Amino acid sequence: MDLLALGPLELWDQGRQFDLGPLKQRRVLAALLHARGAPVPVGTLACRVWSTTAPPADPGAALHAYVSRLRPVLHEAGGDRLGIDRPSHDRYRLRFDPEDVDLLRFRRLRREATAAAERGDRQLAVGKLHTAESEWSGEPLTEFTCDWARALRARLRGERRRVQEQRLCLEMEMGRHAAVLGELNELAARHSLDSLVPFDQRSIGLLILAMYRAGKAR
Image (cartoon, rainbow, N blue to C red; front, side, top):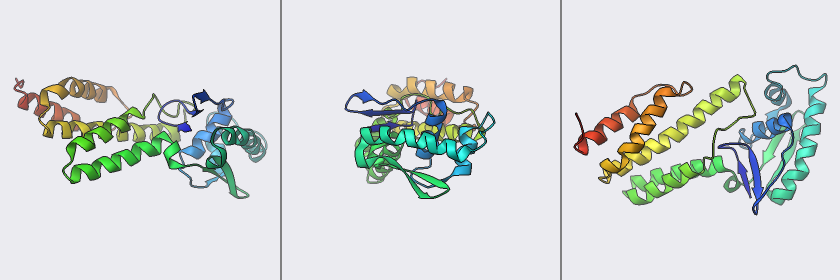
């Protein structure tokens, strides 16, 4: 079973994609998913679900309706591994297995890669970082246009960029300077155009270093 957050919000099991419902229902699931298992107050959920429109007269009842429609879908896909709990009358929490969520697999792989690199096993670290990058399938949080989503999207993009930079550094340490030049050029160009990512010079520095070590510096 796969619950995907690093791209369009999707739920898959054994090759079947499950219908997560209309926009606001999908927003409920996305907001709970990005809480990573922490209970989310009804007021916070309402702010995120109705971020650009006026909420209904009773947002709590509307959220309960969305959750009630999501529950059988989640159970059909994930059984007891996936569901929405209500730990208190004013909070909801998404229950899941971390290995079923691409975002959490991505972060686990990065931790494992860092540990492998610290042990001196660069090849294993590079492989794990490649796998982590492959978890991404597109733009996350496309259901939202609010400030919360924009800030979270920027943080996620930053995590993705740092994983790519970490892998490229390791590949350069392994002597693959010429092989990574094209990817570094693309990363530096994309970084300079991405207004959601705070500017830093690491990708530019890596590119210059790779060019120098590959004998291509001007």
